[in-house]
Image (cartoon, rainbow, N blue to C red; front, side, top):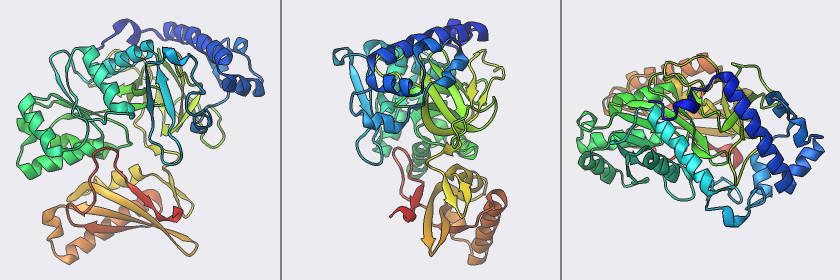
Length: 433
């Protein structure tokens, strides 16, 4: 279902005209309202009057998370605080969080985009939306909540944790749409099995999963275990929150970016050069409708590619392919670039391997080592040692053939690896300790 046919099905010419008008407006605003942006643009030798075409976007300097930290907490806001009705903040891994703000119009825009996302997954009025994204400073829970209400669906604001209770509520309330991280979806499936609950007995029909990279094999695993369609949603706090792009139920081949609000670019993460259409690189966003906290050419560190091919759903927005990893999640093992999602892809294709794993990186002398601890099924773990050794060698060979690196595989018994109620911690890099 297309929620806003007028905008989501715009011709490319009409869309680009709208984008340019909105881009010029937001550049004028940040230049006049934010001294930090003005200095960056002056240092780059560019003025708002220089932005006459969409291709002129490349003249503008990039914004990074470091810029946000330098202006903590409200230094990049373009409106006075009495116009800001809400703030969110990312948890961050070091130092202070990055803070984002929203005007009343921003909140309404965000709700509209999340409602579009839910509609693209087939949700509608009358659906029971089980929202297991975390509520609070994290944008996931409230972003999804407002979108479901905007759509006219019924929201179950269950947030994360207390998994058995969540499953009880799914049964009793008749949940039809599940919102959570993909790793938590697998956790739900596992606990259902422990409780003797058949996922097929629930009314769940579709899950919209995001907030962490996940492979196509994990998607298949979720669909098989929960008996639902699993769709990908993308967003990040700095750009808006969830609802920047979403897969549609008709196409399921990339996530439609809501280009009437965001201009995407793909750049070479090393050189910063804009990449040709279809090339893999780092995703960059410019927000063109946000009032309180617009960002100009924000480097997401997420790796993907863009596609302009027509979609069966009728939306004309370009699609981004599933995020394969992040530039800062990338592991360099003896000179080879490795993403956890690449290892996951191999593991999830092996029969008897459970969708729970952890990568351990160590350094012995001058050499880095990579180990994958992987859970196997009860039946497989109780098998004879010779069979387990054979499986271990088979997986190690598969990874070696695919990635060109040696990864030691350690098969562990079920329930060994800690479960996640949010984003799964996939990598323990002991080189940083």
